[in-house]
Image (cartoon, rainbow, N blue to C red; front, side):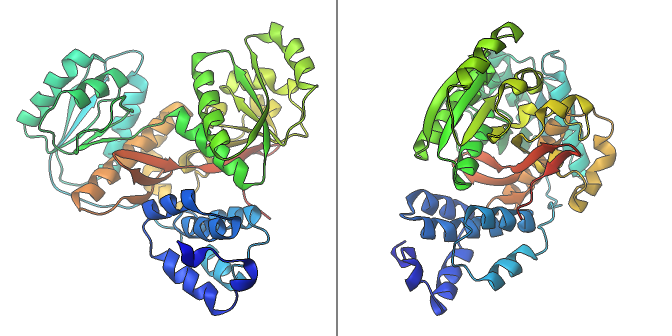
Length: 411
């Protein structure tokens, strides 16, 4: 990476072209590795520009890059060319083979999400000839191994699921001869079997992306405000870990349990100032606590703050909050999403739509793997790439405004 460790004055003229030629052909995974090793902001800017060029929505990605690196010497003509590149369409790859769905369709706690995954996958399948067989799971780690073996013995060449973490852990530990399998939750063990990939909607990954994006925007100090629930604490801890890894500082950590605790919270927050606030909360908790937060301090959150209703009057208290979410939710009119709107319209907003997007993307992940191609997909749930056996999602940044939820565009 030494070729890119240039002072700004040295990176003039033909050097720009050499740098860009070096970076633009690198795989996404390599760029991410280089970014973690980049020694200075100039080098990091070039790497982030290459990552932005890989994004599914290049115009928005380049605009965000310009905001993060306003003084970077990358030529304006290059930036314009990248921004005007046609967005990469959601792929419609076909492949052969029977697909088994191991989903907890009969379990009340998971049925709505499982049904949405199934609807999304079938919408992506379209008129393909693949047979899709459904195997309802019970959310039971002891039973899922036998169910998986049944599916394979009955001809499954690919498996999507299971979806419950206990089931994924059981499958990962079973030492089976596995067909290509895409589990829809994380596993606790590492390393995973070669044919077992994991893909889903972990709050930790979203919180880490918020930390990265905030630091890219120049934020250096943060106040953390979390609802007093296990899920919000997971968001908070993931943000905190990544924020510290990004050399950010924490001014204060505050929590709230109910409306009765808000007065004390507001008094405590009045004693602190920071570049930003990270709010670890769901939508109802965020509406409750928002009046306690300084409106002049940029506030960031993850997708749990958004109910999926673009112009919901009840979201008025959330005005100006920035949050990460999947393109399917914050850029729903994107022309590449048209093939899926009819099927998705049968589902409620919010979480069901997110799991529908996971189902669509699951089909395309299987197709890419079947074709033996490296995975870099502009999906409904984000720009997808592999890190080991995990499918990661790069999300979009949006903001609550008076007109509703708006996909962020930089000036």
